[in-house]
Image 1 (cartoon, rainbow over the protein chains, first blue to last red):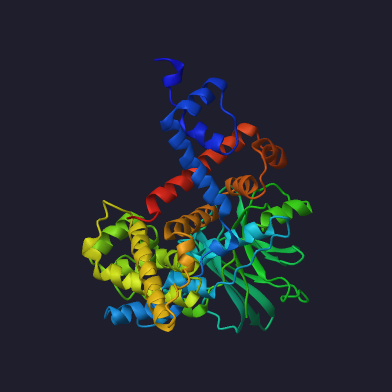
Image 2 (image 1 turned 120 degrees about the horizontal axis):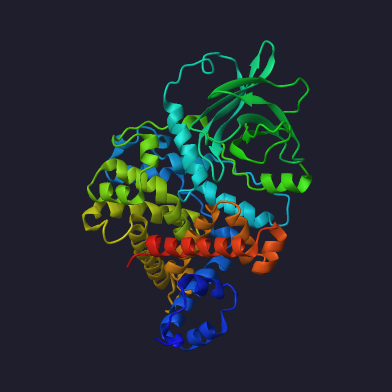
Length: 258
Length: 219
């Protein structure tokens, strides 16, 4: 078989469509080969589509009434005793507060990608949050659920990319001051331990509240800490390296709201 | 930890705040929440075709936002998109015996229905317009005519798939697509070997393409 009859590998064509040059002989082949050209065109289409995505392509989820209307029209009313009950992802997406804390130059790309993910075309975050909500419906008595302290603010904790798990965090008022109550499940495992943080999304300052040794923990909040600023609850995986700063390896996160 | 490192790590935050009310009751039987979450799209499709009601709920949960986004981008109206989404899921459920899980992925099939419903939507709009337009002038072309539903769906699917790339793949693709950096520049910027950058790009492109091929509009 002569050189010119060997088609260019798919992955090289993909990179070529992104601007990489091909080895000379292969370049000559591709220029003359219909099959390779067609393959190249398909890659170019994918790339052009990706480049043309804009913030508006981030999905807006259907209103809550849509699911009700569907079940009503199909006579499946029994499926959904409460409108919110069945539509976890859409529901979560609808009430989700999307927070992008990127202060960097790619602010819009990141924030719309986050929006896309949260709004939940099967976005990981949303599904995780949905899963949490499902777990949340189970009565889960335990040291954490028991105290009937007034809840000041709460949030679901959703897994960050690469991670799994979910849970819930709330700020409760106790006779001894405010506490952050964290309840998690199925967290990604790894070398090290989990640490709970409160983060101010504006200044990116963070306060480490302590290690989370089991699926639940209570953390006293220092008097005077401005909870209106430190609204992000973050659980990170920290290596046993003696370094007190955040490892940058966050597992789950959520934003407190009252 | 320097401030740019903090920025970088915080920039990837995905924060969802879940209403306390939204604890779902598993009212339709079928697999329970976590088990259902881990089911493949194909398994949901098979159960859907089989008429298991929980699969309709799950399909809506997984692809309701996709259908709605495509409809909203095509009709230009969130309200119309709600209508389209409703009609799509209702007609999909009623026509579920026509769905063959071996032939197309369920989201692709749903997008095919979406495409036809959006066409219906514009046809009825244009009929209305013709009635209103006593002078009989040609009605204005619908925004949907400017861009095919397939193209809109492709963009929404790609946007979704990009949002699901892990790091550093996602950052690499953002730099390549939106900041127009060359592979060399990306390697320098992120202090990653050039070969690694290329292999991430190659794999991410494969993922994007296969998402389009699997979930893109079925005819």
